Length: 130
Image (cartoon, rainbow, N blue to C red):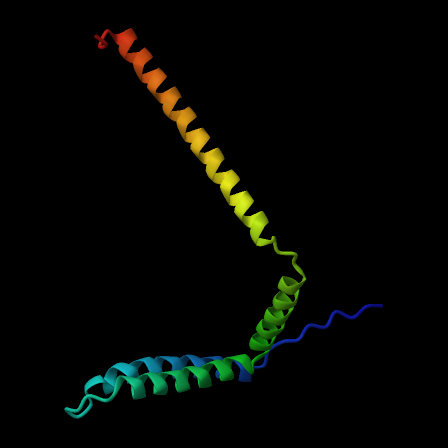
């Protein structure tokens, strides 16, 4: 007998995601609020560093949920699969690119010729050609 068990997120995960979203909104609002705070312009560097710190905290909070852990697992697996791929060499890439360019050029010339021929034949049939 097989038992189908799925991990289900707790209500704490929902709270964590809401806190994460609130942190993001607060960080963005603070970035613009402190642009001219009490008549003094706060340094752009300080505002960006503060925003990055808050975004980091929000991401950390979101990744501590079940959905975040699944996302991290998916990203690790994807990275592993990309490493398994066999990438073309520089020479193969250049050859393929040149072949595509040549084929596109030949096809463009062919279509230009067909268009010119059809245009000439329609003009001739309608009596517009001199």
